Length: 187
Image (tube, rainbow, N blue to C red):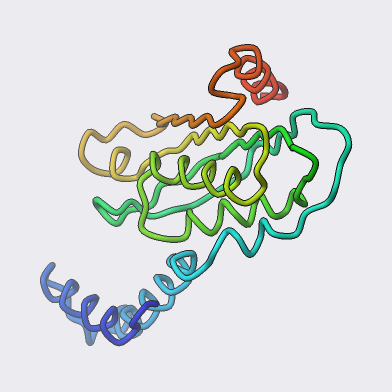
């Protein structure tokens, strides 16, 4: 849970530390605005994917389901700068499916906290495996990291891609290729 008073004080100290006048008109409400922003950006830390993945529907057909191009925004825990991009999730149900909006909500649970992309990708895959118990799951995250584009090496447009496979996707190269082909369709 975000302690807004502490965040406000930290922002005031940061502004003073970079030589700003906190009483300047444009900065007077900045600590409060930043505290509200962090409350919103970190709301996933209190949330559980289980809540979203528990409402399922029975199915007979156990073909791959793909939800692609899920836009996400997160904050890097190393520099506290944003990273953002698209996540693609595929799973092979074992008798039950979840509403597709619940996959998007699962992404939000893990993206809305201090994060690294590698862990984000794995946490989504693991939550789906644990809660839906599918035959397999594959998650790909493609993201641009502001810590690499605005500062440091300053390479805008570069993207980091992470992939996690579980269950049937770990063993079956044809499933992996089908996933990749489906993700690339329409690009």
